[in-house]
View 1 (cartoon, rainbow, N blue to C red):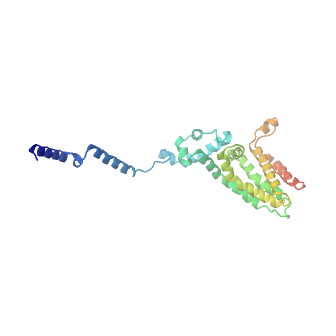
View 2: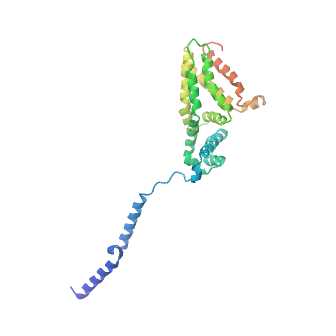
View 3: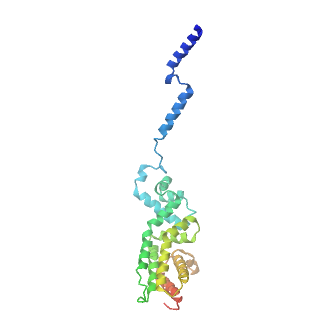
Length: 264
């Protein structure tokens, strides 16, 4: 080998020794840095779905404020027109806090019904306790009363009034979200009513009892939530007037008894 070539090789070797990373090329160093960055990302914890100050999440009353505000707004305007921003503004909380506690809007609607589930359970229990044998001539009335009275008691309670109206809206208004909560929380209630009434009226076809339930539900919801009665009565009648409970029970009882040619 010529001397000039030997010198060039020695100079290159000396430069490589002075280069960082043992003489690796710039591209090799970039590749190593990228690899290290990717490895460090694996150790990063995923972010929460909502970022809110710790001072807000630590207040239990905030959660209740959101529930009450959502319940009132849904009952007043319906589910679809109300936004999460509307709920946050009414509750006086940061927008992110609604999502932090309840997730999406439809999850908040479901939580409202879950929160009120005890009164549905009470109605089911009362209906199942009715003596439907021939020993109880008032069985039909007892079933109607067990089914309707808790709803009207909730309607007169300031805390429960928005929810009672919300139930009516959920049944009347179209939409998958409302239909889901009605199916989840009220289909069992309807099934128990029909089953119990069939026991009290064994000679009436089940389909006729089902129609009787539908008519009864319409009458109950109109008493709870309809405001047109005030206009039609020239403001002599009042929407949601629980003083009409006995009239409702008598009316519905007579309807069921008419199916077998009896009078209340």
